[in-house]
Amino acid sequence: MIGIIGGSGIYNIEGARIIKEINISTPFGKPSSPVVIMDIEGREVAFLSRHGRGHIYPPHLVPYRANLWAFREIGVSRVLSLSAVGGINRKLQPGDYVVISDFIDLTKNRKSTFYEGIRSIRVEGEDKPAKLLREGKVVHIDVSEAYCPQMKTVLYKVLEDLNLPFHAEGIYACTEGPRFETPAEIRAIEKLGGDVVGMTGYPEVVLARELTMCYASLCVVANPAAGISGKRLTSQEVIELMKSKDQEIKLLIKRFVSE
Ligand code: HPA
Image (cartoon, rainbow, N blue to C red):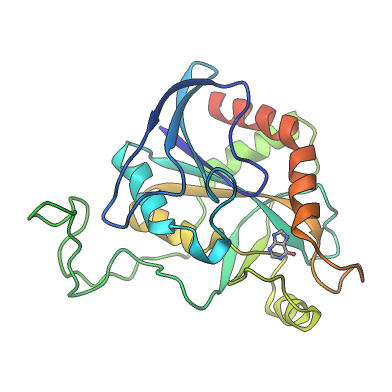
């Protein structure tokens, strides 16, 4: 099953028939929202709102581990992440799509692994450790190709078919937030090779990989990053741009799921 994580401005997939809502608890607490199983083009798709209904979780407090664990528990094998980003690379215009090819982690204070060495993970109320992890294991996953090449190819096809402006590659720099970056930080990220900046792409991608799920990230450039346009940034402009993309994103999801 495909699981979709919707970011700012994407709190559900309007018009999709809801099959059921799953309220799931994980060893890492509850996910940001119930997982909604939808029928899209005759296929079952799981949807999760990253910031929760009513946008209650700021980027640094999103229960990333619970979200990915919940997806895995209910049988998701491919995760499509949708999010808004600030554009750093001068080729990027607001409204453009970027298929992420690599990331730079600039977060500071997030649990970014399921593998915590000697600390075993137990499901509340059960004696046995959670199913998917071996107790006490130290694991270093390979992230030389963190984003699923097969899912990326499908995204290229769908974006081309719909004639949407997109960039086939892009390096995602993830900052801690919740504040936006300073212009000096953006200049530094640009020197490091970052094309776009966001606050939620990490650790989501590595957690999905730890649970052996394929993961792809499709970003929408919502604004020029701090200092690039000379204007101040507001979260309202990010949400408004994403809202204006509502129909486009819905169409894109339909096509993606059907491929
Ligand atoms: N910075 C960080 N995260 C973001 C931005 C930004 O400029 N725009 C949308 N998400």
